[in-house]
Length: 370
Image (cartoon, rainbow, N blue to C red; front, side, top):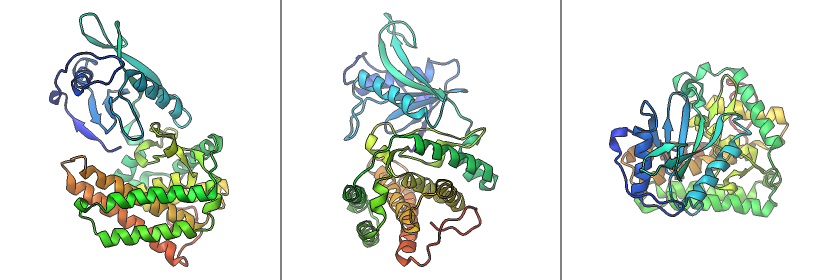
């Protein structure tokens, strides 16, 4: 998710309590205001995402789900949010053992006062997790000093992910359905990117997505990749990775199992795209190369490049979609969209030329291009 920082003074008290029923925005405002001003001795930092409010204390993180309904998720009732909190805790245990502490109730007493795990009826549920040191997060390391990311840390991360992919449930997809799945995702990317109000280069977007669609149809080993689908992470990005003191991966997608059903190489391709977006292409290359070496996966360099191009195209679509949300920093999202489209074009061009693709090699300075 992309975040917006807010200050406690920006929030106001809300309206009447509603339990286990669709609730109006004022009730959410009351809960947010309590978490900002009344829940802790020192006001926490707060982050708003599309689906949640996240509150950060010195040693804990509390995530409050919004009562929203989308095409893939309906959290308008208290019970739905409770179940979603429990699912988030359970799903993240494999990649981040011990980090997710559980779900805690927000209660309201007879005098109308809110409390965390207090007396009175439960009016909300929140996920509680350990707060991880910012300096241990891969995105911070890549921005501040990519050379500080040691080969041993990458090796430990890859081992952690490889164990996860080996142990997570397999969910094979037949070849034609798998191609159709990739085409459908690309069609969505294309439709959003080509909306006239996004003012992108329509010829460029059309050319990129047309060529990607043709590769999806023709790439030989996609048939085998469908058989390798597992219930993976779904949103593997540097901000979700802790490198030290031991590797952890947080924020596994919980709201849509279909997005977790993924070829591990596609999961890792997104991570590589995001490393390149942060200016650390070599780190993404190294992660992919070490994984391929350690697992002896027979994936072709062409398919790795295809995945990287597809994942970059989807990230471009998600970036430009912020314009539809009325985000005030429109130029930032347009610049991000352009950057992701450039990454997508780079890997598609490598793929189409073919003779420039080389088998992955481990090592940051190896010139790995897939």
